[in-house]
Length: 319
Image (cartoon, rainbow, N blue to C red; front, side, top):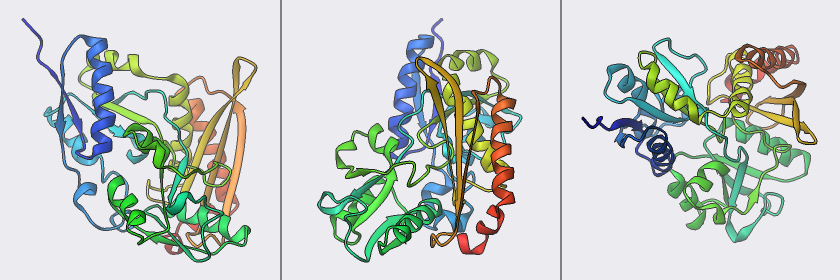
């Protein structure tokens, strides 16, 4: 008897459908089973409030997780940066595939870069993290920009620039790459200027803990280097007791000596959205060989950041 199709839970957005479509194809090749996409609307998709107002944490994943627990879908695909840092006991993070480009990018009018924007340029982003770092960079380089909070999908955000309502918007490189719109990028922002959100560019594939055979099959899509990197980044976020809408940036880089990857550098930043104060630190150590090692690296850097006053930058002024 032919096995039934596996049901993959996904958000309805163009980006989410594209991401899930790629994963579905990979799972078909792995298992020989058909995979059907089950579209699920999350609270974050229907709310028009800014993420900082609705809490951010879990608003794009709760409905998908509820469908998994209820057995309405067999597995789900998330943008990993949207996942709360606490993993529910009844769900498994079965795979973290190889990461896309984690950087943020600028889509600006007339092909402009950030430094070439006109005085007083209006730059749209829904992220306090981006606001903090862009405003800090502008201050240090004598630039004057106004960061404008926005919501919406890629079409909506880029539309603000096309209609002349904004001079530029900041988006994730990974999203534009995945939907085939990389040619609209006018500048890739260096991670030395803007650290991405913890887990940015990575996907998370979850299934029920009660489905060990499916979890084992999905684990074939896991990339161990990506997993330890994002685990360290998310451990930093958790230790700062911050949610995914907080003004926290983090990136774990794997450092190679020739052909051998032997170290990991973890960088973190917290700041007020006006850019007047930033705490930015890094630590380097051996590449973690376990989940616990990666968690420890994140906690170590978070502890140093808290000692430098990071907690005070994540309160009301940061939102």
